[in-house]
Image 1: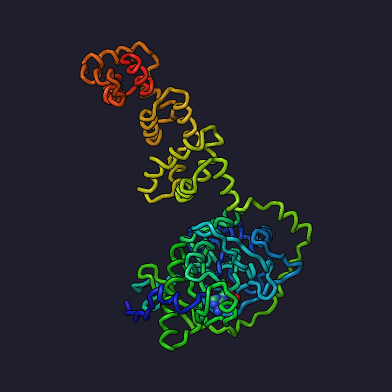
Image 2: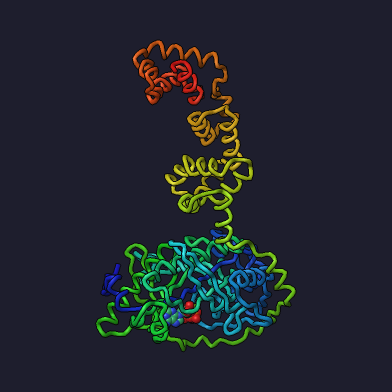
Length: 515
Ligand code: ADP
Ligand code: MG
Ligand code: ZN
């Protein structure tokens, strides 16, 4: 592996004292349509290489593309959800360049006539404040194929002895969402970048237009960063009047955490260059997840000439206003609003809601409550043992539970066994263990394991009498008014009853007998 000289970086706080950061994020989203953008090939992930191709997506001579209607609808729904205008008339364009993973030698994209433009997305930050991200445009294009470089240590082309190309991905519909330069974030720029990508991902998931899996590449982010001298508060008019600095574009930053780290790193790197009197080179950069740094990619000027021209083989897209309004009516409740509504319905504190969100259990809890459980019980059961085990397996709770066949209905049933008085808490935990071990439904597990609180007060009373008799000293204390001593006796009564008693009832009986 060739050694890469590490760039100088400035301490982040020092950089923030001297410079004002500006960001621009370009997010590519693969739509999960059944077929590709301009042909009928399937789009499934992970298929045998070059098994999902045809003359159109291979760019063979004479093949003619046809636009995927569903993809155009998804593009418009994304635009509408981002508060964009939808073009009355727009065309595709050819973006000409040569690369082995692009068989046509041009990418069918959109250039100066995007389907959606001029929107915004309000993003909630950790402290609850809102940052409005202005959206420049969202346009339609197609994905390229994938190159695999064999023989090198790094998987990159340098040092490889041969390369393989898989065209299955070529022609999958992509939407590129481009922000305007994001100003005024100040030292929170990295947090804002991460919060934006996260909010966008939630929105796209709610729209059900993409798998939005950053780790599989169905959502990819390029982060543009520049610095300008700091002359005042981030939002002051003096600061906003300072011209933008030269940007770098860090490509394919493929996790939320990386978005934050890459922006932060580039800020520190630019600051070191500018502070030393140098100038930033406008270029693309590669992000290295392992070392947390970026390295130089290719120099890129604004005037880069792709010789764009309107695609002659496709008709323009001209959605009627009725179509646009019909699609607007299909938009889901915005994720931020939905989160607030659920939190208030469920009576969770901010912290509780955050725990549930971090655990990815919002939908599970929603379904569990719909199946009859209280919101408190639903949270308690999902965030307990099932979450712990999912974590230990390195899985998210939804995937983990689905694989086990453990459902919201099971949790609601378990909760009902507790509220009806059949099980106490510790018995319910044993039942949960059984359900997670695949022993059946909660009721079936409770039946099979003979778990049932003893309702018969006679048996409980006998146990209480016995415990009082064998612990005269404790009993005397309680008689003298030391009520807290009852705890010791309750423990023994529960032991006598092999855990199958109601601790509250045992306490009542003990106190009734000794006071
Ligand atoms: P490119 O073709 O170079 O990728 P795009 O227009 O697709 O250009 O995207 C450029 C992105 O960079 C946009 O999000 C834009 O807001 C952002 N941007 C432009 N100038 C600057 C700058 N000086 N500093 C930070 N971001 C910038
Ligand atoms: Mg771009
Ligand atoms: Zn095809």
